[in-house]
Length: 313
Image 1 (tube, helix red, strand yellow):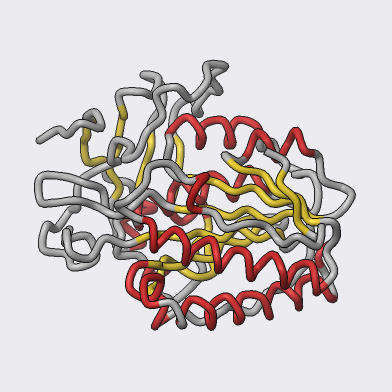
Image 2 (cartoon, one colour; image 1 turned 90 degrees about the horizontal axis):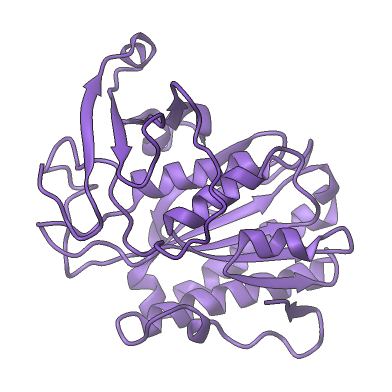
């Protein structure tokens, strides 16, 4: 198998009865930077969730056999974009995976906390904010050409409500709030989705730009999120902006999640609306600067000066 500057991986096809029943296949991937006991099973891209028939959950896309990944205490010094691809396309002619150097996309993932504490006005404000975000990006030619959006929500479980979709085909989903905050599961699902959705640079051409991820939460995670956050950061899969809303947010937790951290003073509709406008400005600003700058800090627009949103790190 050809290798690139991102590292290489060893691969073997593994038949699984449960996957046969779904009409898909999985491949066992062992990236060089993982331990010998780690096994990743990635479903074929042609699954019902990708065709819009059903939301994608982590159990549909990612399974572990053997020992689970272990956390490393080493900083993510070696993390870089693009990471080692999990596997090449099973069908090189697949239009969803074929690389086109003239159509590099900016994948944007929104991870939204839909736990019970967001019920009522906050969840309604987020729905309105998504519609406003779509309208703002439609008015920006660079964003309209380059940005693709995906929505992942997390409550008691995590699911990808909207797969990575171009702006012209994107429809804001209906959001409901209930349950707890399974942020760790959402991060594992996010890693799975990026490896399935994003086109990586290879012999056929350049891949997509490094994904941009916005995480919005109003409280502490309720699952075991630490390993998931550390493993995601070590892989260097995306630039993450972690956003905490309200008084229940722990800045230390946010700092472990994101490359950049911002705080919203509350979850009122006006504050969440201002945050979604800032997200749309961030996406548009990033699409305008692609190929001209390195890093992400200088791509983000200024925060509102009314104090509703402030930079933590």
